[in-house]
Image (cartoon, rainbow, N blue to C red; front, side, top):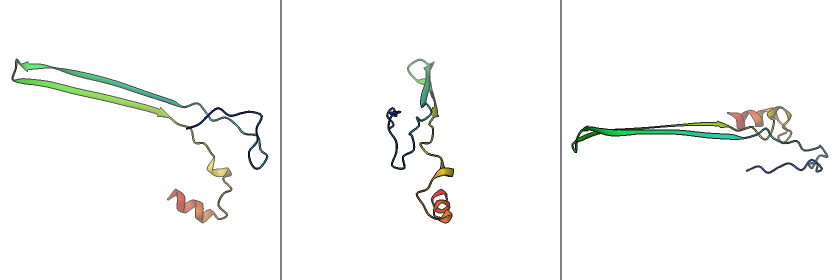
Length: 77
């Protein structure tokens, strides 16, 4: 969950906050069905495709929370 960034605020370090890239979430679906033999045999198929574009809220290259690279590497692994 991400709200709009207030351009007038700064974070704890005094740096100006920047907005995240836009999010997108698209879901497409198709259902198809019908009889093969009346009242005895039928077919049905369903397809659903989901396409998400979710930006990361931080850049790992500028992360200063861990004091050692090994700590970051263990998190990545």
